Length: 231
Image (cartoon, rainbow, N blue to C red; front, side):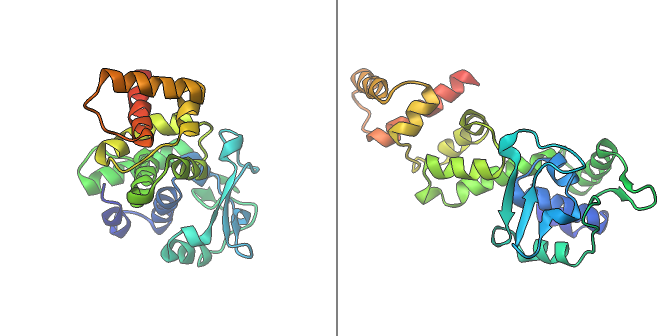
């Protein structure tokens, strides 16, 4: 959906745009961005940290991570660096008088209402994370492996590969037949041994003699079939 149009709209405050852009570029959860404090922007190390702080905890232990500045747009980095933040205070939705954040739900509802007005469609902040994941996954589709996909999912703070598979890999495989999956990753997903995986491929080829996929492509097909049945 139209992220650029949203970021260029005069309907949103500059802080709102920074919130939207951060969620989109980092593929982060809304709560993770909402609870960022000044010291989470590491200017010396050139890192953006997502971690437990005085505002709240991460969803799981995999959620604690950092995003290097080189993975972010120059515009987003400049927007962060051009603002002055107290190291211990929230960056977004912060009441300087009361020294606390206002309300997460109300903050998101307000921005969602503006987004729907700008786009004329029933889209919201929650779509940003999934859109970013899908774009990241499909950007290098010609050279993509399932392992690199898991690395991208790790950057988003997923706790297990099945979550990543169910949410993203099915649509990517349907758009391109170029993604290959190795035996170890396929066996891990199907929760079987590599020996059992080879036996499953043999059965499939006997039942489908017209099929000419190589082993890694057949792994991809079996993964998708498994995901569809598990979803």
